[in-house]
Length: 391
Image 1 (cartoon, rainbow, N blue to C red):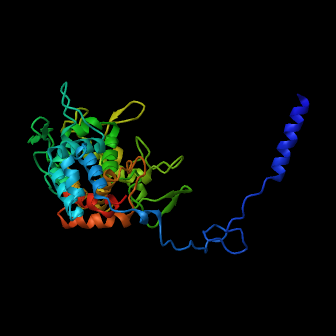
Image 2: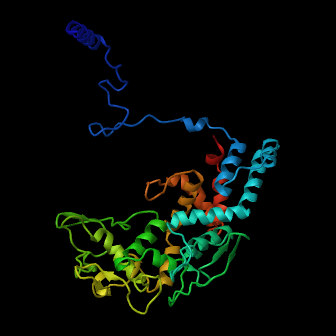
Image 3: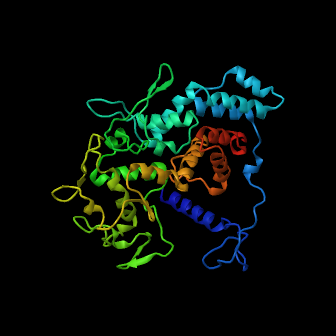
């Protein structure tokens, strides 16, 4: 037994010693590598003239199948398949079927699900609590009716539609949340019920992540400064936010002001909605001190500060907030990015960092702006694109 182990060990050592070493890398030379490194930052990658993506070929039948599953959650019929397969112009035949899908009642159902997933909310009214379906319903209705996307933030009435799943139609509905002005989903009681929390911070985070597609910090100065040895990157004056009862200027662990200079200028706009999502004539959220306090404006901001969407963009109420969001290029790019990720089966743009490069997004932004911020038309452009129909 011992002899056998010795033999095995000897063979193993021999094998290791006689095994050929790794093949020399093309970059194992005295020349600079073809990929930049800290030691050779001036090196350049070779120009790429061909990639595996260039080997894809157009397949309108495969595109038809994929589009139907995504837009209707159903496979195309045999008649549709044959129409595209036998067409003299398969591109035109495919786009005709695409138009039919976008007008199909099942597309409405699909958009309702898309917006519920995107907004992270859903559920009917119950036990005196408001419906959490109406905000996604409004977004889906704007999408399928071809209205400007920004109506989602600026619509002054009829912002809480219900959906009749049997007859596949929306029914008009006012929110009746008591807000002095209506501003699309920004005044929706279901939203404020779902995202109730201390100092209305959860509501601001929802707006930022769902409609701007980034986490906080949201704003960056082109001239960061040092605060107590840490980088302060926001364009807002550091001293604009409160220090009591919570010190938002604290820098001991992180620079709170990098996020809170933006958050604290928005949150008071949502603070009068109570735990049931209803507007009250007073601030109805709490400040999380040891003994919680009803929040006051001075808990967010120092005297003289104005409520704002972004630095240099003051707003006095939800209607003006909606107008500021509607004019924000980041908000408009966010929704088109979400549509692209939906079509291409990408993960979430915020939680999974599935961002869309500007080089990819640009052509769809042109379509979006040229067609009056119409999401339905933009979806058709994405589903008709070379990236979608090539496999």
